[in-house]
Image (cartoon, rainbow over all chains, first blue to last red; front, side, top):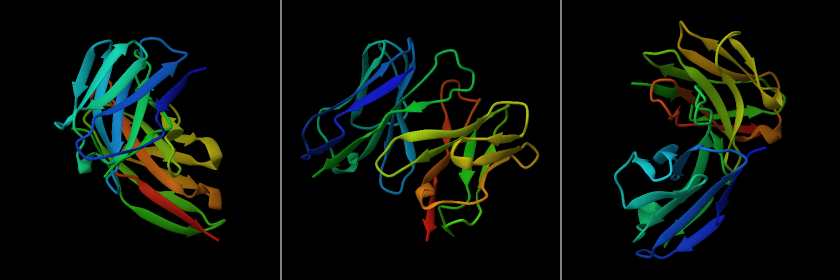
Length: 114
Length: 113
């Protein structure tokens, strides 16, 4: 069976500090990978998605970036965090050839920027 | 462009009462429809999905949804809710944007005793 991991589970960082959130998927190959953010009261915002190693599509211009160094690893980064980067970050995957695009979500990372 | 509208941001309901969470979508192509549930500080979990065939879809935890193509709706229902159903529920659609899902803004279901 497939599983998806995210770490850390919670993170408190000062404004201006760097960020690295990691997501890994087990039990599947060639997944599509996604990063979402939930800010308080603002629903799900798709930040990045990837259909393969090194292939990243950005949905929203911001000070965040994403990388996919391995097939089942997806990393969300920032060089300098802003207060507005606080939120709940969710990683998800879907099967590459699935027509319906059902997505499977990780447990999330709660980021607080102070 | 595809979009999803969840008509209620919050739905309060007493335990053992029925509930309906409303979802309307717009799309120029055939769609696949989903309902996800999110408990506090957790990821999203699939409740049910409509791909094709019967318009009444049954999911986990006693939930069901009905696809209505003429009304472009996919409302979620449960005949008798429990305190443990308190969570946020998201409707989503795919089909027009390749690898992506379009999510509604979410509906918070609050079950009171």
